Amino acid sequence: MGLLLFALALAGAEPETAPPPAAVPAAPAATPSQGLIRRPDWIGLPNVDDLDRHYPDLAKTLEIDGRVVLDCVVTVTGTLTDCRVTAETPPDIGFGAATLSLASRFKMRSQTPDGLSVGGAHVWLPVRWTLAGGEETPWLTEPTPAQREAAYPVEARKAGAPSAAALDCAVARNGALDDCHVAAEYPVQVGVGAAALKLAPLYKVRKTGGRKVFVVHWSAADAPHAEAAPPLAPPPLAVESVPPTPPAEPAKPGAPHWIRTPSSADLGRYYPRKAMAEGRQGRAEVSCVVAADGHLTSCVVLSETPVGQGFGEASVKIVQDIFRISTTTSDGKSTVGAHVAVPIQWRFG
Image (cartoon, rainbow, N blue to C red):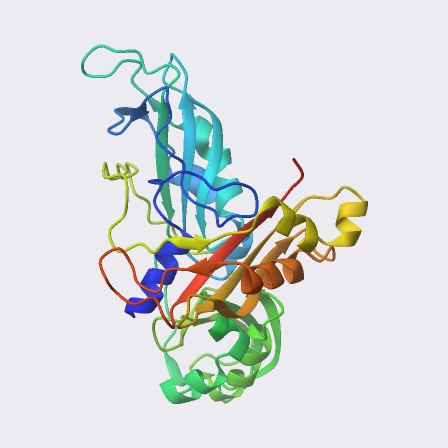
């Protein structure tokens, strides 16, 4: 559990250190020179309906929670502008874009308690997206923990990321599931949907006839589990009324640090040739295991945008060849064997 928590913290770190250059692991924004509002006095916040409308469709279908941190500039009237995503967990399922679309719903008082204008200052905005548990249909039979663990896709396990697949199945007269198909899965291309289909014959429900939609979740932190999900509407949202205030300390205890990152020459050598020739830029995120010497090994692609341009493959190569990470955290804990999520931005200039 400890290693996984470290990996997730690195992938979705709090905005406390300076951002890296292009193709260096994404890191939180530094304290801006215009000033940072650490304890905003919010007078306007999104409501439950706002969050429900903007909740990413795939994440809602798969009942996946998320977390995003924005760095925004505050206007003289207390509204937010020029927002950018500094952390997003899990990546590439839509939480970053959804949070950006909600930024206009936030508003703070135009002056601080000591009378200073907030105009031009920055604010860090952590938003946690959470779906409340829906009504569950009891299973008559279901896979054992050992069976679910055995079905956990190897590539997804290596990635160290949450995985889920939604199955849509016909319900036979005896409650068994048949004619199942994958309605959605995350992440893609790592066998999550196929693994869920293998487990489907082990489930049986009290209801007979019709169809049953349910979600199978896997987590690198806990044993995999399956939860019944309502077949028509998503469960209601559980929301935080006020976003938490970012910590004031400049560095997070226990965080590792990068010993080596790519140079501009390295980026040129590894940049996908077709994408470079066509002037394309992209993004990929890979998950790797920390080796005893700080190398990153067993890397797999979690996501890439745009697809088919080679950014995922190039990211795996450059991370395994070039990147080095400390083998201990700042508080002395070993990082060896931990999973590290490394987002890579491929861009010119």
